[in-house]
Image (cartoon, rainbow, N blue to C red):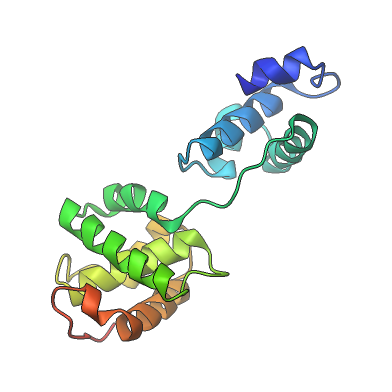
Length: 171
């Protein structure tokens, strides 16, 4: 739909169709809260990442498309799948994220890192997946292990009442 709209408004002149198609796929996914990274979309469209980013900004400006940041909760199913966790871990992580948002622990932080930190915290403190490592979670979320560790420290000390176990384990 976005591609047809851009075509109808004559915005494709001088631009690669593959790049515009990638930009419209990315923007469409963002509008419906589907997690797709620009790198994934650029690879699928066989265009350089910078070209797709440029066209995303161009289409946002010309078509007046406003997309806000994704919430951390939308990353949980993807992380669950990548890490092989059960639904219980995701439910506990959602509760932890709600408490973290109430405490304003998410503000100014990458939603991927917040989601990864919530899943890691739940796995450590609630016993959902005790053998899960920071490096595994970080790789699945495409963040650094330090980010996961920092979110663990914040969530473990500020939100223990959310978790069933309630006792803090060492990372």
